[in-house]
Each structure stands twice: as structure tokens, then as C-alpha cells.
Image (cartoon, rainbow, N blue to C red; front, side, top):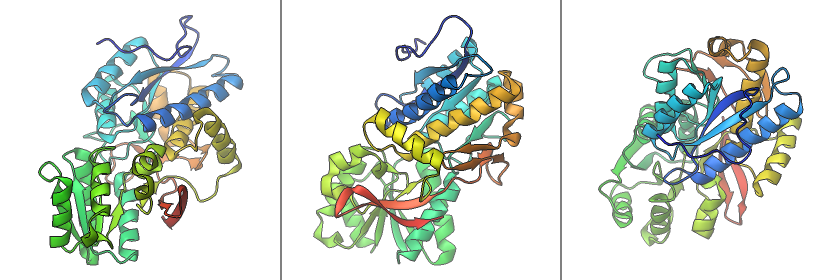
Length: 370
């Protein structure tokens, strides 16, 4: 496989650096804006680590690879980075892609700190090699389900595409809501056009529509169509996977981008570290950083701490996950074994349900926290 070149200046050839492989979606069909934010966080933290003396005097270096949201490509990239001698892997946003990368990293004995993916089962079997910073999907989506119930929604339609991630989300909602009087109506987006979705919502008397579907399409088309259907003037549209977090959502949808609650993994108020990093990320990105940028930054903070303490030996890095205690931008990061989750998990980062304010779509409102 011919991997794309890393950004200028990202790789050194003198052999003196400690290298981390960075998995990031930077081209379609990957969620490019999420990838850019993730990479900005990773790169900012690497710069700060190196400004502070690196890893016991050795510079920290990212070898950046574009996964293109392709699981097979991600597995091949992991093979390539392992051959290049990276001390660990970092990053990835798309859960299905991270799952492929985690499986390969586990097989190769290569430590992988996953930044943003949320699937509970990142690997088929429990592994010592993989740790995860993002909250597990079951944790975040149950908080979202609590929000739905509190807002009076008991008949909830889920317009889902075919993927492990979307199927998992629908199952979490169904299992959590059913004992609490809620009903989940699954709409198969392989068979339904946006107008047919509107008819299904009316026929099923749904009061909320959730969008576990791809971005920008078909998510944008569904929102536009539902918003223009007078029969559905009172329906709530939600996007637990976080599509409205990014500026592209507001650009594509305008006023229709607002009042669509989604999950975000940030505290209500930043710590001094979080505030400083927020300012630096905003300068780097030219816009407000998403929670994904903070996930990237925290990933490097953890790996740098581990590498300083235990060296660049891969086995020592994997053995160190349960001993991590590092102050990140969103609280103290520690990993533990959590029931039903196959990797070392930070339990838990702050979780919010937020939306864009209809009166000012560039402003976010916190609706619920867990």
C-alpha cells in the first residue's frame, strides 16, 4: 500500500525522535472536519511536549496517516506504522474504522490510544493493548435517552443506516427506553427516501426523530425535508452522534441547523488548562474547537506521560494503562476495566446534550448533562 505523505515537517529522518502513528480521517468519505479538529489537537499537544523538552530529551513526532473512513485502509496503515517502528498509535474518529485499527493493533502488539471512537466493543475480545478516551456509546447514548424521556418523548423514530455503530446505537436506545415506557421505531435508510421518512413519522405518531446516519448525506437532506413538512411541525430532530457540533453543519443547513440536540464531551466550564488549550486550538483552527480537538490534545498528553515514565517500549506502554493518572483538558484521566467494554476505558469524561440556539445558531445551549 502506498500511504500518502505526511504534512510537511511531520516526519524526521535522523532516527532520534519518539514516533507516534496518528490515524485521522482527512478525505471523503471520512468526516473531514472532525479529522481536521482531531489532528489540530494532536499537533498542538506534540508541539507543547517538544517545547517542554520532549520525551526525556528526544523530540516527539507524529506520523500522520489518512484513514479515509475506510476500515481496510486503517488496518493496512496500522501494519505500515508498526513496520516503521512507532511507539504507539493515536487518534481516529470513526468508530467502525477505529474497530479495524484496534483489532490490528491488538494482533501486532502495538499500543493504541483511541481518541474519539465510542463503540463499546472496539475489539472482539478484551485486550491489554488498546485504551479509549471517548465515553463508551452505551454510556453517552443512555444519557441521551434520559434527556429524551425528560423532554416528554416516548415514541422515538431512528433513521438508521447499515453499520455496526448505527445498529449498536439503536439497540442501546431500545434496550434503555423499553423498560421506561419508550418505543423505538427503526427506519431503514437503505430503503427510504427523505419524503418517505416523513410519511413513516406521521404514520407511527413519532414525536422525535434521531439521525444515526452519515454526514453530510443523508443527514442534511432528511433535516431539510422534515423541517418543511407541515405535518411534522412539532417533531424534535436529534443527532446523538454529534453531527451539529461542526461548523459545516450550520453552513449547510442555516437556520435548520438549530434545535437539534446532540452529544458533546466537554465540561460545562473549562479548567485553566482547558481554557488555555481552547484559546490555542481556536487560533490554530480559525474557529471554535470541537470536543474532538480536545480529545486529540488529551491523547498526546496521556501518551507523553506514559512514554516519559516507561520509555518507548510497546509492552511497557500497554502495561501502564491502569497506572495512568494525568490531568487533561476535561478532568483527570484514568483508565479502568468497565463491564461490557473490551478495552481500557476512561470512565468517564463529562457528557452534555446540547444544541444550537435557534436565535443564534453559532451559540450552543446545554440542555442536559450526565
